[in-house]
Image (cartoon, rainbow, N blue to C red):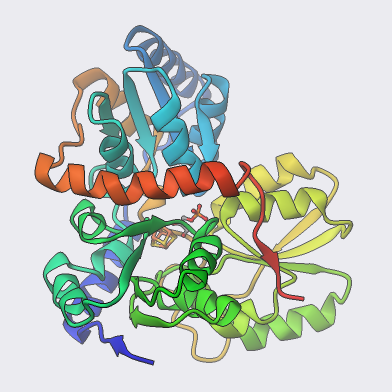
Length: 362
Ligand code: 13P
Ligand code: SF4
């Protein structure tokens, strides 16, 4: 398979950024302080015609607030759709940078605020536009498909943007049209898509610092201890982990699988913020985290996205009261990125019902 390599120096920078983010501690609030803060945030959302769009990996209190105030807690595809379709004039994104940028690309007329400007994503960081453009230039015959976890500039260079909930369907569609794919940046999701669809793909070699730490051997041992458990895996995980899954899907699709499957016990390979909504969706079921420890473990993130966890109530209150962290994107880049993103949103409207999960491994 034709691939491109992430230089060691870039990988070190990503690891360092993740470690630094992990060291950031939230200020502890008393119950009264928390109540007052939430009251102020609700007032701001109301008076500023703003809606809160949160990812499943952010802290529970932000997820609850999004639900309570008519916003949404969702996977990246549903976050993009919701921000785009919602009538509010301000969209506040609790997630990571690419999610806030996606909202702005799709809705340039809206004010988009990011709760944390510094919240990155290792996949986005590991795919700088200059190197990515060179990679594309080497494969002019290929349709460029990029994961949503990329910068606006990388999306602008792409023909298609996909998220984990729609990647297989888009690859099948392109394969059936005889198109060859250039895929970036996640090598594990790309490998999974390639194995499932047989599409002709060349691959950028990025990875998620959280999901790459799940360990297949330890998971196999945990499955032996709990033969009745179903294994739910996000496709950013290594192929050995995906091979052990009963269901592979986006965060929304994993939650839906937990709700719909008959099992009472689940082993879950994705970021630990997801357990909040999983318990809400299936309150009588039990969820175990898939192992990140074991042979060869470095556990820099331990199923915990350091950037998602930078989002907090205080940050949300600050951006609403000051207007800081507004997202701006160069119009030439935005308008090109809009084409590849809208292609995904339109395709999703036809092919993916909200929350529908993609596939089982069986
Ligand atoms: P989802 O689209 O499945 O929510 O994934 C986003 C993400 O960043 C997973 O690590
Ligand atoms: Fe990026 Fe991984 Fe964090 Fe998702 S969990 S935002 S892919 S670093």
